[in-house]
Length: 344
Image 1: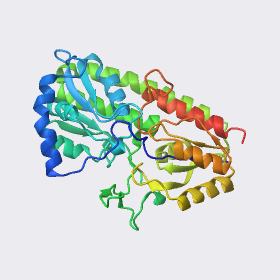
Image 2: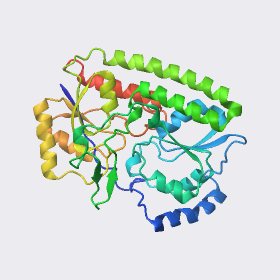
Image 3: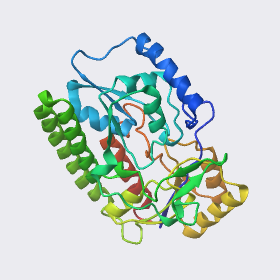
């Protein structure tokens, strides 16, 4: 049996839906607003704790790891919010101000935050950029996840090229990689704030222990699935690390990309996806928490399959939800996949 995961663009009217254009004019506009945003402070009037190390995390997943390691010794500003697509995020002046004030900026890297370099340059920040994907064994994106013949770049509807080097940036999708990223966070914080180095390393060790437990529990959750059932067909290529860790095979992707960017598929593309779903015999297709589900629901109706539970990929779910923490994201995804495939 095959699990189908189909995504579409973020709903119109939601925040952060455009990519930053790397133009001099945009950089000047952001930079010119930094001093104003910094002087005004945060929207709720709160300021950083006295003595806390100011750091920036690009995504909610990264922020959760940093907060677990940093504790009260860091003040974390998260750029891309919950259930928001980092691929299509556009920084605001307040984000640039936070980057300007930060001692460290934690990113996933590997092209996941294509807008970050421009935002850092515009802010005038001299913060150290900590690339967490450098701490793991990065895998190549599937062959289908590239639109050019060499698998080095893709272009959006306006013709702007985006290089990914063929690498899959979704490194956080396994607990094992999460533990490696946690260690990298601890190393960076300890170097930047030696006075609290022991505390960072102690918290990191405790969190790595939780991730190890989660890894064991996830393996047990997926345990009943046979080898034949461990087959994934995805639209947005976000499950490469999950597949490699847990013995799944990723057959291909409908969007042909490791990002959610680009125009919606054509009617012919949709028809092809429907045909693939029907031929696979998959019982359900799954929406993602960073994408609009309207197109997916249309495809499900045409293919006569169910719309499964929402899987959390590029961002944490709402606070208090099953995927509201990084550990919860990993575990809730595994449970949804196992429940959908077990017994098929």
